[in-house]
Length: 231
Image 1: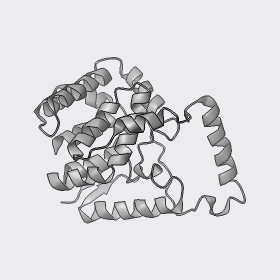
Image 2: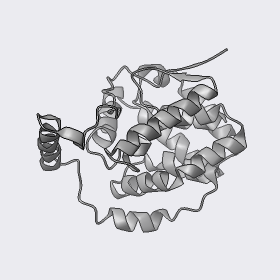
Image 3: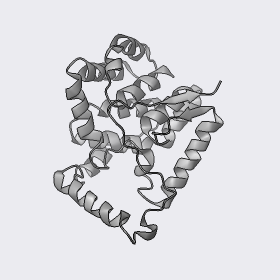
Image 4: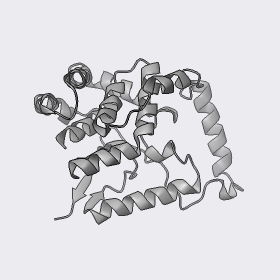
């Protein structure tokens, strides 16, 4: 499903190489029949919002949304398991699914990184891809709701995925809940997270951070979703 590849790339960190491929990406969006004409237009608008202007501005906007705090984390299991031991096992299980289908990922990426998950689903049969999106529909709806609260056009990506999944998620209800959430991307909130992590990772942290639980990768601006399909 080619539209999932485009959504994956738009959800990842903005890169110069994609800026040179806007025409090709636009063609895939406009040809996608898995989403409505109105949604195709929204996706196309987002594509141009990201790549028609200054790339550094787009990168700064992206980092301000997705790399600060946990509310908009693009790691699926962050929203399901937090930092519990279950998260580590869930990622091991998902990695096993990838490998069973000949899908191998770069060591720097965690398997629950949503753009990576979309890249995997894009190569599966359409019905399986829709089921894969349905499995995480509530998370997609939550991210859409939080992005709407921040007036971010990136909500279009998650609305598109929900449309493809066919799962009726009440995003407006989730948005009303999101409106009451305390922001975790303020300087004060980020300082508090650093203080808590300093205690967690210090001596005597014990089981609060099991060593077998993978931690979020430190992505550099030049990193991208890196995959390799077995022949």
